[in-house]
Length: 358
Image: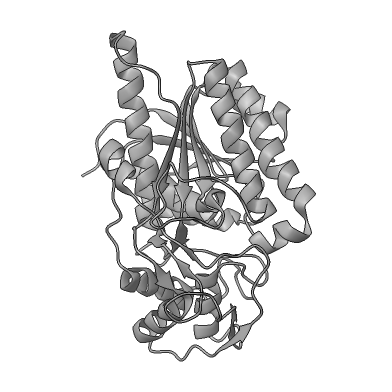
């Protein structure tokens, strides 16, 4: 049962996107008030409409670019935010290799603009959408937060650059509370089937590609590489259900609220500073294992072909999620079968995503 009062107000940049929409629902269910800021470059206004329908309340939405400081200032001037969840950013690894300047300009430049405006309005609580790509090709598995960071593609470099900026910011001013959530591989969809991952054009991520093949929108799946040193030669990743991931953001905000409340009442508690936390299941699943699991759930054949390795990809990557459990009281609950089932429900109910076919 929802609480009959709202907690703090949160600005969600990139809130019309895949992870953002699911997090908006989780925030509302936890009692938070939400304002969404998104330029709709890889998302849809219809996604926000559906979130509003699911929660039974209209979400305030501002369509603008994260690099537009003047619009950001207007938004901060007209709201009293506790903090920001910062999703806004470009995220396709392959595209980042061919368009690195675009990724640095948007992901790094946009974050700097956001931080400058936050500082101006004294809003110093941030949950940043980072990525497991900051670990590069890991030396040891599972990966914990103290593992060396190095990136193999510009997308990952842009996330790592922001992490360095946040670290330096926390050192320069200890009033900042900055959590970097390092996601592993989000998949799945809301259990209602009303919202899910809806990439523009041909998908860059594995699960929407699989689901579009299953629904007949694409002929076959291309698997990039079958000669990795893994269980079946295909890449291994830590797939996490997007609703589990959304709950991780709520847990991070709850942690910040508890910590800042303690700081206000006790000189013994230190500010958070810069705090990186993995969000993953701690289990690796290969591309082929995911394909077979999806085929079992959907009862659809998934034709596939092997192609060359994709630039910037690595063999295996999965998390140690102990820190999230210890500090945030969070852990992933949903299985690979759940991820496939919810993705199939979303895709079969919405074969063209959020686009209405006339």
